[in-house]
Amino acid sequence: MKYLSLVYPPAGFSRTPAVIREFLSLRRTMTEAGVFLGSGQLQPVDSATTVRVHGGETVLTDGPFAEIKEHVGGYILLECADLDEAVRWTAMFPGVQEGAAEIRPLMELAV
Image (cartoon, rainbow, N blue to C red):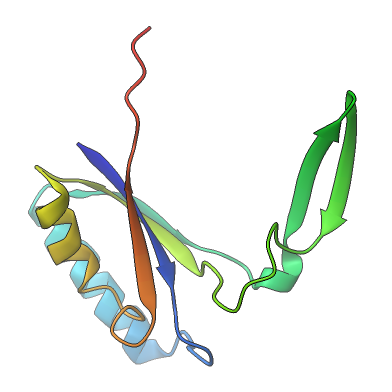
């Protein structure tokens, strides 16, 4: 099953060379294990644009959808046997030890 892990790094978290090396090493390990499908880091929250459609009209708002303290900093897409395996991998991501991560299974649509 595919799982999307949304990473909420702690305030002040930065992409230092050591953090990048740690992630690249983990990504290599996940790739070798056959669970890594993709990842990406997001630009800062002040670059967000929220899109809403009201009465057929598209309305754009600067900033995130919700006013919250924690913001998604990146994502990792995994292919795991179950949630327990996704949790084990997600717990290794840089930024999760002092921040948080949200794991969601992807819905599989039958066409």
